[in-house]
Amino acid sequence: MRIDILTLFPESFAPLNESILKRAQESGKLEINLVNIRDFSKDKHKKCDDYTFGGGAGMLMSVQPIFDAYKSVEKENSYPVFASPSGETLSPKLAKELSKKEHLVFICGHYEGVDARMNELIKPKEISIGDYVLTGGELPTMVIIDCLARFIEGVITADSLNEESFANDMLEYPQYTRPQVFEGLSVPEVLVSGNHQEIAKWRKEQALKKTKENRPDLIKKN
Ligand SMILES: C[S@@+](CC[C@H](N)C(=O)[O-])C[C@H]1O[C@@H](n2cnc3c(N)ncnc32)[C@H](O)[C@@H]1O
Image 1 (cartoon, protein in one colour):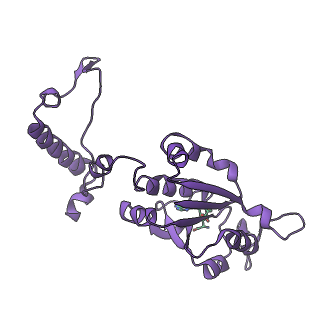
Image 2 (cartoon, protein in one colour):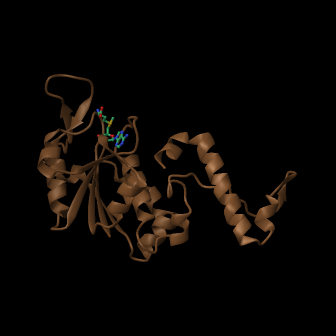
Image 3 (cartoon, helix red, strand yellow):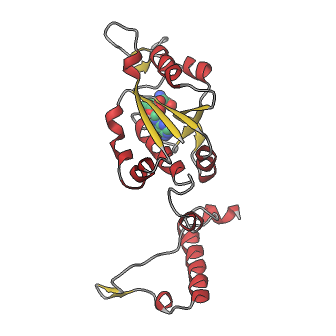
């Protein structure tokens, strides 16, 4: 999959070059390209924002540099995404759908947001990462990319995905690694019993307990 990210702050994306996402890029499963929207500004001072018509606090990103930046990477199979508080909330289902696309183009808003004509011209899928407002679309875009990349075949193991929180409208059961005893706390006996049936039963019970305690709303979905 190829991902182009249109942003005024390309330096913000360093975290995409670490750990699992770094390996996904090195193995060719993912190709990420950063596009600086400012390079496309036709303003003589390379300005990319302006005051809002009708008044209001703060500056708004202008449509022209974003539109031209988008056109510079657009292909037949491009799927534009706009990180926005007005969008559909990110979910595993949505991330899975995105992971099947061949070419994603992310548009990062900043300041007060983006001139509404961008939506009319580019028609991006608007995606929110939650009901709160951040200063820019850079962090939400990284969150969405990190989430969808886990569904690209071979980026992580299929087992990791199936057993994970939200996979079956449940949270994940508690997990432990060595040492077996730490500060007087022991790993539950069943996990070192070697009895796989009992381990599976214990994990299911623990997942249900945790979900009931922390996220009862998920249980109601079942
Ligand atoms: C300060 S916000 C603009 C908020 C806008 N004035 C509003 O009330 O909806 C600047 C940019 O951050 C991004 N952003 C902020 N919160 C977000 C969220 N919860 N999900 C996705 N993107 C978000 C969007 O790209 C947005 O254009």
